[in-house]
Length: 74
Image: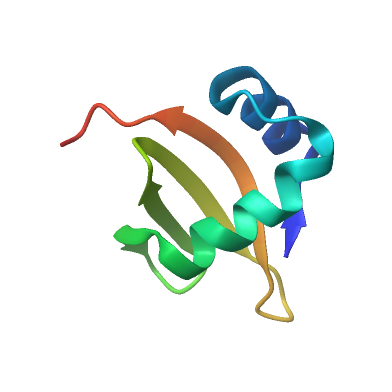
């Protein structure tokens, strides 16, 4: 699992977690979150605790967190 610089910034800003907790939080999102949508094979969105997390897969099929939004979809 990789978190981009932008992803780290958005987790801190929107979720309010300190940087040292980001990797643990994203691991929980991947394990316990609800798959919202998938675009093709490499892009997907997960909903967890009222936030929408946007991921892409790298060539080794490792998830990369791109950004986080407040979930206004449901």
